[in-house]
Length: 278
Image (cartoon, rainbow, N blue to C red; front, side):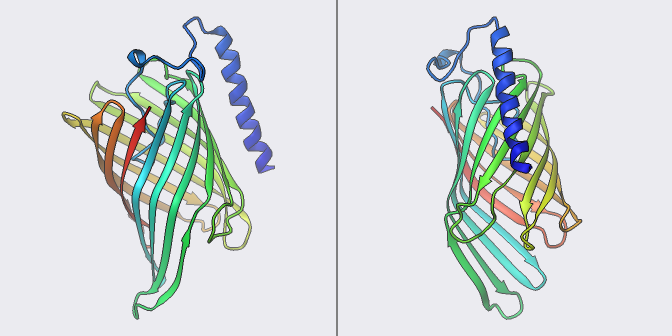
């Protein structure tokens, strides 16, 4: 039933796109008729914060957003786990004025677990992780306005060389608002189903909000908070995040930051990455 739900969401989004497309009076752009360089908007990205962007990639253009290096630390029940990820890339293609399709490909991931007291290595695994297919439909705001809302269904395939997660997925609703010309607000709610240790699927909910601000010429900063709730653990986890984004030019950003778990036993995440549009 979960798979039918994801397929239904995707088909509904495509249907909305076609229905609204027929009513558009503005000039249409698509894969075969890309948005001209002179008419492209400021590049919008789903990274580096957890909150997804409510905007889509310009029609006919390609965008890649990547964690060049991501370091995750966690200490729980006397075990310290460390995960290092390299070039976890989100490849995105603008399909129309309101839609894009995305493929998240983790190039290489390594995990180690050690006993905190003895330092003994308990487990080590590495390799290629699960691939995720995402589709974003902008309900409003991609073509102008102070606010924007999108729907983003996603599904992950069990392509990992070291885990057996099965098919997982869900749907996210990102919202964006322009408070001033220099201050931006974003928020999202997300519901997903994940395969847990008992080989059963459970729901996981996420809510986040973020504020971004221009700090200096070509440099922006953001602060963010988000919480997750798992129906498997019955626990809510809280995170405080922050980072900087340096705009090399209108089509290239470099970013760095952290996601800091506030609860005992939650992840501490440090990352550096980039976004590029062509």
